[in-house]
Image (cartoon, rainbow, N blue to C red):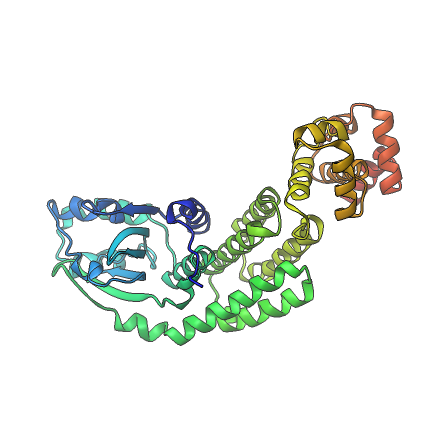
Length: 407
């Protein structure tokens, strides 16, 4: 059976968002006939040399889907996915430009000498390099390839081509140095370990996820990384991939985004190598907990929609009659179907979700008890207190007092 491939325009926005979130790098979708490729370098070459035409024949001479890593003698990198259709390339996803090195005086001098640039260009060069992110190409390639695999699985078998682009000669050559550093075998081992980790987390087993991460960390040699910035980039990549993996079919994207944003804040504020190396375990624990709390893959399409609607609209009218009208179902049928699939009466589920959200709000905000009650859709304060004590064991006020003492 021919492998079904998702349309590029359908999945590109998700790839673009994840690449931007993980690396703060530009990501664009280009379509044939590719008359203007200045977007790939933000028009930088034209700013430096005026009328500048890049020789792109090397890119378009092969009739197969490709991933290309282009390293310029201007010391920036682009990663491209090229999609072939009827013997020609009709679409390109481009990431970059980004740099792999710190912008120092030595860096600037090397760039100017290698490309025969005049001193008058130094301010423009400085502004350009400080405006693009510092990222390791290897990290971008692994993330990009894995994202592409989600939507077009054949990319699992596509190894990246590493190319060097000489600005002064307008010439493209194979980057032998890069190939020596990052062989196809190592790339395969890297992706295999990452895939094993991502396939384990949806099971919700924390200890298994920890074991898979330790294997992944060994493959990418985390113990040999002593840069906070490099670790932060690795952690952001892992956070993106876990969030994407779970939101695809296991958990509503709303909840995945909550965990994702919380982890990004933690990563961003991490200031030591040791602290960064502890974050993956906290991350895996949170995503495994997310699966346990919000996983409903086994439910029918209808019940999935009902569950998601309830958990995202707790402050609204969620009576059986209102939900039946919302989903255009007979109330008796909806109630029976929900109970059969979840094992919980629908009205009980609504109350349980409301109280669970109340607990979360008490722990993460300074809202008053009455405000929390209204936020979760219960206007009767006495009824809210009764339901809260029934589920949690103490009244809302007692719970808040315990939190304050603990903190």
